Image (tube, rainbow, N blue to C red):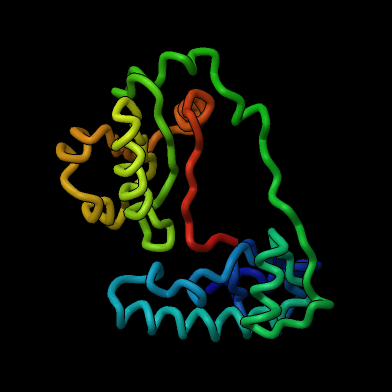
Length: 212
């Protein structure tokens, strides 16, 4: 177990980069909380309604216990800070905002950005979104909104990027029928391709119901 591996190291402090700590470890610990999605959006967590409720309850207890044990809790946004205080009743004195950094070199558009859309079947003006297709990402509602846009702008396309490990993209409809509506489900794309598409799109669209 992790506590058994940590003890011989005689660490000054152990930093957990997620919302749970190895509670059996007795050394000094701090943690980072990016969001409390399993608590506020349990329908996006686990598999099936019962599984979601059980998983959400377990994670709720684990997060509360971890925050209680942690000497310091880093949160990556003001929104997460409010959520942790409001919903988990954490001591605000233990919380510190630590914003996530951006690698501006890695996420600069590549020189060939202008030819990437056509390579992926995007011709003319297009919107782009990045998703994991979980319910809180609201991708289905975006597709509905795009269909309204096409009523007055039939030349527009929608590029949907993201890995679909749980097969949730099927809920959007048949890929061939979506393609006939200028909706391109592109699956996973590497960072260079995503950055290129963002640089060439009319807009990056992100209709998520909840983020940290």
